[in-house]
Image 1 (tube, rainbow, N blue to C red):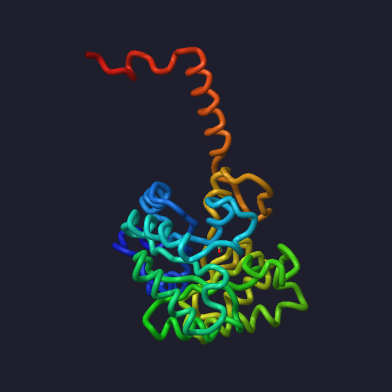
Image 2 (cartoon, rainbow, N blue to C red; image 1 turned 60 degrees about the vertical axis):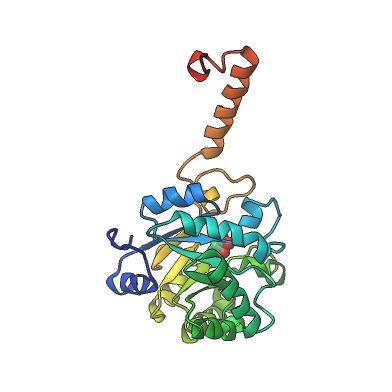
Length: 271
Ligand code: KIV
């Protein structure tokens, strides 16, 4: 964790952390209540990911998510934090066409949500977009390796960075650093490849399923807390069983209402 007394985590703290060998910790968040809890616990950055598509909006993938859907979630998270650095995820179809389109989307997030940075997917192919956004004074977190918005192009949820793709991964990593990204997410990349990228880059690497030899870690909070349904990737460590806790609570509530034991006198108003 970046030194806790920091008032508000900023991009320079990410760089200092890498330089000093301090690990950076991030989670996704899509709402005010989790943002408050994670912020108070000292999580360094909160990503309002387009994974909201699978975790909030009920889509099968992140592809249908729009800027208009992410803006209110990002605003809620930004308003709920005091210390954490809040990053808005640019959804599929909101930046690929041109650097101008990317800057326009980044402006919307910065003006309408008060996030502190944006994230977008792609290495070499997104370098010009990153350069343009950074030149307007907006920090960019890059995202390479497995990029969920290109799930169909990549042929599914496949581990990246093995021998034939290593050269592309390194080229992507250098391209986003050269374009001015302040950090780069490495998703579902072999530990060895992630270690090599981390060694070669000056900027911090943030792993999501990229093993231990990176500068920081990021997890989707609903996976991490045991709330997600469906397949949980191997790299996720579940730190709680929220689904179990809520299932037990709702079962007790329903039983109490059925039995007439809720509400009791302590939950009722007198004259
Ligand atoms: O949207 C998201 O949650 C992400 C992370 C998995 C990197 O992009």
